[in-house]
Length: 157
Image (cartoon, rainbow, N blue to C red; front, side, top):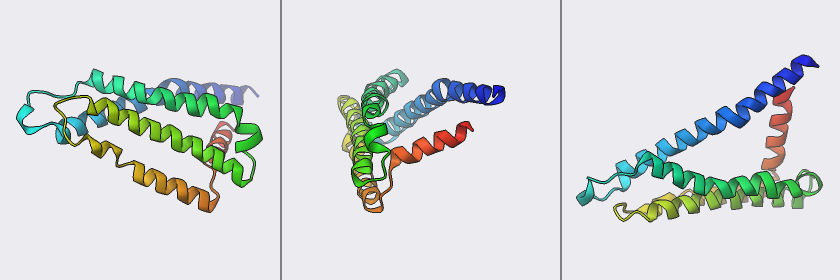
């Protein structure tokens, strides 16, 4: 029992502290690089997207995703989402679609507010594969939430 408790503690520390930090830093550098390399207008090369602005946009986009997937989803997870029915994976995958779609849209809004960036509509392009993946998951009966719960359940053991 002691070793599984220690393993869970280490896993929880990694999931709560380390992985979110890596995710946020890599997301910030990715969007900063993409916007400075491909979206800055030619006549205004003196301007660039700062790391702090990219971090702010990421946090503004990530907070609703966090609320949807870690708060709202909790009300439905045991009695609706984790059931092996169409309504279970429909509700679960729809919450994922809304959360990730919201992240993409708020990221687009954050970068499109900068006057020295052009073609920021490119940031909306991930909507196409997202909707395709959503439709495919419904057609195949694949429940994202159930898959992630199983992943974390077997990771702790």
